[in-house]
Amino acid sequence: MTMNKDRRFAEKVALVTGGGDGIGRAIAVEFANGGASVVVAGRTEAKLKETVQLIESAGGKGLAVSCDVRKENEVKTALQITKETFGRLDIAVNNAGVDEKSSPSAEQSTAEWERVIDTNVHGTFLCTKYEVPLLLEHGGGSIVNISSGAGVIGVKGQSAYVTSKHAIIGFTKSVALDDVDKGIRVNAVAPGMTETDMMMKRATGGKAENIAKAKSLAPIGRFAKPEEIAKAVTWLCSGDASYLIGATIVVDGGQTVP
Image (cartoon, rainbow, N blue to C red; front, side, top):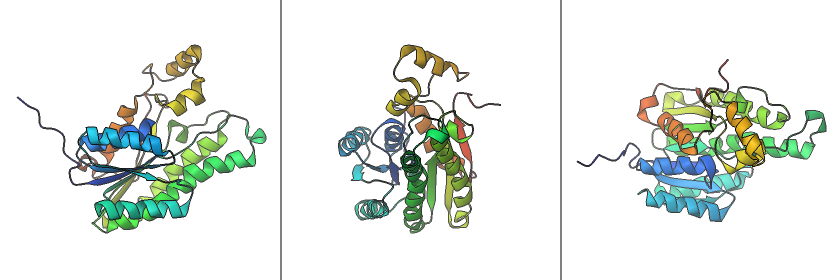
């Protein structure tokens, strides 16, 4: 007996920023598994094309769009290309982000602070600004902003990153109220330590002893898989989460449980 494939996103169009690898790639593929057409936006074209291949292997339609979320014209163009190609937008996941070079705030360079805030906060704002009108053209949809476990706690030496991820949660709460009456739901996911290149470099330096120590910080005793974060995101964008507005789902293996 053949099981029916999950098609809950059939005929839907999703945009995932930072879709070239890691969590963003896993989110894009998960939407494709559900039948969606997926636009992946990011700065590294080769990685985006790899994600598109995975989307197509999952049975979906994929499109790679070069986009630096810090640049308004590029964000605007990415949404225009999405509309020209697929005619609509139903789901947007604002995942693009960067980490920071760890240092005490007093020793942090202004340039490094601005790089992190500009990408993580300003980039999320710009994407939302141009996603909302396109979502409204077809009666609304869902936006999920990717925060972090660092968005609900403090982390030594990570003031810019922590500030940016807290800001995303606050932004989500506010924007969620803007167009809820018009059918747009906005929520956030805050991943804990996840098996991505960015996390491995930032948190462990790739050293076995550091990896073991980092894993021990989560009561579950391991890192999240990108696919586990992706499932939380796709659930938030599905009809099963229709009453969630302005919420942040923390997916961190219990690390931030009081």
